[in-house]
Length: 465
Image (tube, rainbow, N blue to C red):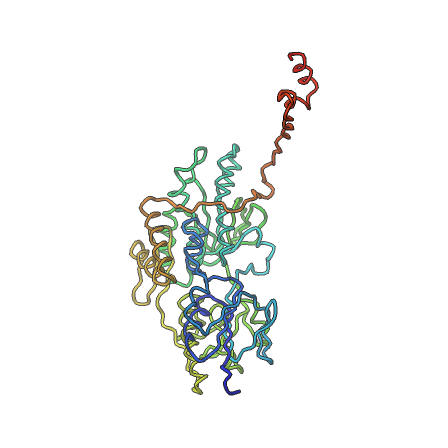
């Protein structure tokens, strides 16, 4: 219809979706970005919020502020529930939005491989709420241990289990051991935080399986220097309250009693892909064409963790922020081409490296031909992540926080933010104070008011008067 501009709907304000919106800024299009959060989250640093190194505001930026200069972009604070492909409509929690081009970048969540009952016992790490819940559990474990007189119970309270030896699990375990041995050592009187036991469980033969083997070995050595107990070929078979059951090939099952269990073992794609009516892989991801479009639907692009996109070697691209950023930029370019009547061009990923940090001064970095370990890799990791953070303020604040943590060996965000002291079965008894005595009337003897509820005291006051 003449005068009507093409409508682009983007689902998700993560790395992929945000870069599509930025890339379409100023184009003759009406762009709507839908997200159930009002902020863009820098997920690679989420574990540092969970381990009380950074504050939530350091790694999150309001989506509206990020896109404020893109006058053709509208942001909707809403949740996409399903896609009506035949009518080209996105069904929201309230209402719907029509599209001519759709970009699905709704990401992924953690998966428990059919054991969803484990989720409340072992929280995963995908959102700010997840990070704050992890931080709460970790810090409460130290607080409860400080008040515990029984040595066996104290040992259980100071045992932390991280399930999953990928980048998230390695970073969590390293940071947890680091804050116990560096940041908390001067804060407690009855316990030694450095005695905390941190156990990292990996079902495969080595940690960081997507890295070259020698980098995995370097990461494992760094973890052990930090005091982390690394268990490979350790399959978790059961999780109950305060206990993890581990089975190893050819060995009897082992129980690890721990107050805090953290999950970093796997992810599953957003369920939104199911409404497309196309075949999905085992993780719920959508296989896409080289142009990042859904087969048979050139108007629908699927990006990031929701997509199975082929890499240069034919293997699916990893779920990295760098992949999502490049996919977003490329998709914006392709949409511009489509609107101009040009054909779509295939996506080609440029490998900018794979990094994982271990503690506050060690990391591993795989840049292809260049591979780094130790402190040099940590410096590379630091600057790569600073450059990717959105907003000058975020970069400056994070740099100052890291500098303080490194120089002073302290972490300044150790806040337990929930008001209710809900410690499950171990909740402290709530002691109700006795009621206050009624106030004295204007012409009443105050002593009588203080003793009006006690006959013996009332008689004594009367006698003395």
